[in-house]
Image 1 (tube, helix red, strand yellow):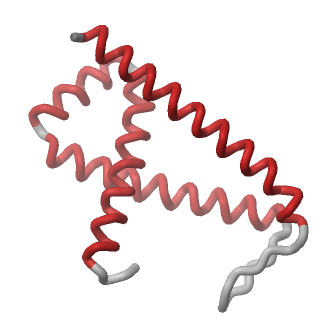
Image 2 (spheres, helix red, strand yellow):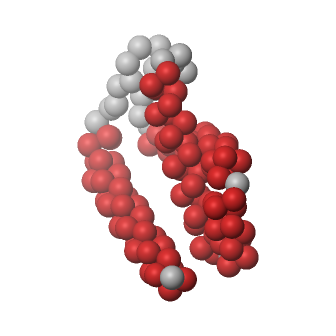
Image 3 (cartoon, one colour):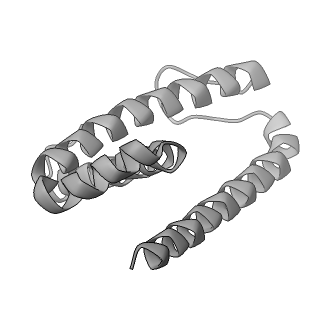
Length: 123
């Protein structure tokens, strides 16, 4: 990890965003948790943001492990030192990855729209 304060701040923000997203998904699935998190959002934001950062860090590590496992299953080259190289199977996997990314982007957009609808219902 870099000791650059800007990099650390960006990484912390990234992890908080991931943790907040994970918490949001959990909250949408459980109405009681939704109410609890909305209350904490207004009264205890500092500890909630720390919780999000921790959850984001765990989620980041899990995602890295999943990607590493997927990469090893696909047979990509992973040298231990130096730049990472990818064999020719990467070109056949790229359309699937792009499609998965589109699907995830659409899911995030749907979740945002659903959140806005829920916020509008409460107002």
